[in-house]
Length: 350
Image 1 (spheres, one colour):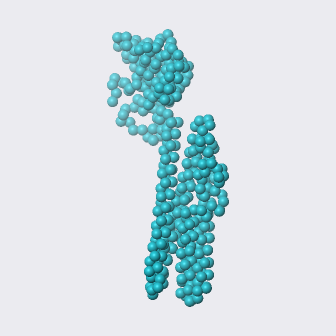
Image 2 (cartoon, one colour):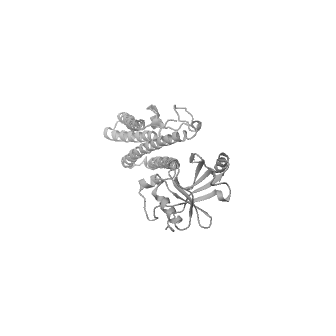
Image 3 (cartoon, rainbow, N blue to C red):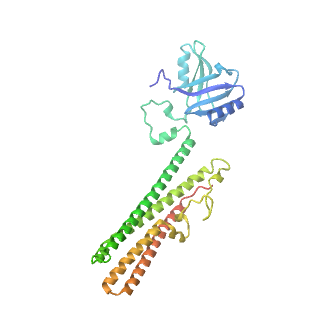
């Protein structure tokens, strides 16, 4: 709701003798740097309201009379016409300054200074729009008073989300690997109690396929979570690249690794070009164990069919090796696809 066409304070002027000293003092007090510099004025953004320091001139000087809050109106000229017709006097302006604002200082019939401003055309209509107006997403972006600060805030939020995503993938990988290994160890313990009974073979014929299938599902999800972790980490590296450009010399605090022993190394197997690294993932560890389970199942099946131990051992070893190789090739294929995708996405240079 507005009162007599007023919409609140948009710009407060302080007139000073020494502009440079005042800028230094206000920068220290406010904890921010000016957003606008030009001519006889320097302006700060104070939570959406502009605080402007202006060098004293023949019309305004420091002191109580040197502070002039500017009330935002839709049309400065119409406002001035109405007030001057009713006893006010134009003291300074109306005039359009280099920021695009149209300003005017009025003296009311009692000698008080009353200043008004009309926002620049580039400013959002939200300054003068009724509270009932709902902006679209695009309009809200255009209405941001400091889009650079909004970008850095969004970047930090994205960094936090990516770190959270990495934490979730690591936690899920650990849980799935633990579930598989617990199931396998429990099955082996149970088999130990049945090994010398007539039910041992029947028990293995049921348990081994179940454990083997659980291992395949676990392996596939471990590969997926590893890829998700690498993709999130690459995105974090791009964000760190932006951080490294904020100030001169900041790059040394955000080094991007360029080798296996680079400082602050944070790029895992999925980003390396060498296939050797595929041996050092959690997914590979589970795949090897599961390949042995599969080989054991093949050996038991062979000995049951042939009755000969030697062919069954060879069949088990061959099955385990083939399974381990196939699972390793599958994992390397998935990592290769990720590497190609990451190379197609430009990285931020530091």
